Image (tube, rainbow, N blue to C red):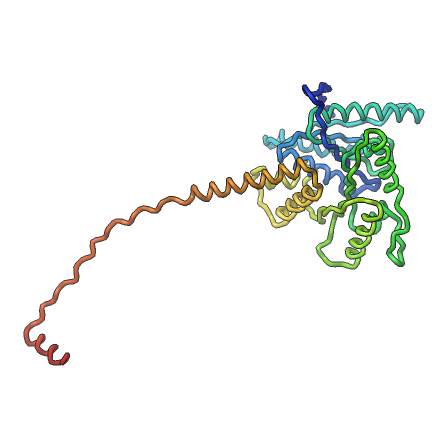
Length: 337
């Protein structure tokens, strides 16, 4: 797959500081790529420039999603926003130290090019522990960890007592995130915002859902992450992969598609996630977009209200005067008196 090459030249003046978002979870099937793609498209549709990096060179889920998107553009003749995309290959070296140095160098160079050319860089990581994944976490401004709403996925974050539902200890992944936070602070004094989003939420108030709510809430205070609303179990999220589309492309692209309540609810879930991220530049753009939309709606309403034409005067025929004969008049007088 041919990937576009980003220019290594930095813009004139002060170097551009892109906001780096890493989608990370060492367990597969949690919705990382779906979440990643919806964040990328959301940012682009808000007017931001976005670079995307796929560090899962084996599975390449994000890369295949974007390739499907390009094929849809060619076959359907439609224009869709595309990020500047790169794939970081696994090092060919067999010696661990050489391989890690090679992967670190290639990642940092790719990230520097993407950050110099874009407002945001979104990175999709593999569902396993790799050196590239650890390096990516270390360079993140924000780590988003999608988990399915089950205790099987909660085990990625912590070990939970099956009897008391109490947190016993953080998981290996949680410890890895904390380690990368420390490494980031030592390297450049920066910090990493960690967000856990609960995907495939059920609309039923089940016992498992209440336990998950309590467990993630307790864990967030202990480990130090924020909880974000995730995506429900909707068929449309899975169906759109083959076309490389997101719910925003369908809702806002002006396509002749029959929309359902599921589409509307899914778009709202994406919007809720963006607001939960609490990125200042993003919040400002969302507020501006909402204000502009309200102005456009008000303007459209004003244009529809036109002055009604003055009704033409209608000649009302005079009521004919009936002259009564004299005896009839006298009779009416007698009755009135």
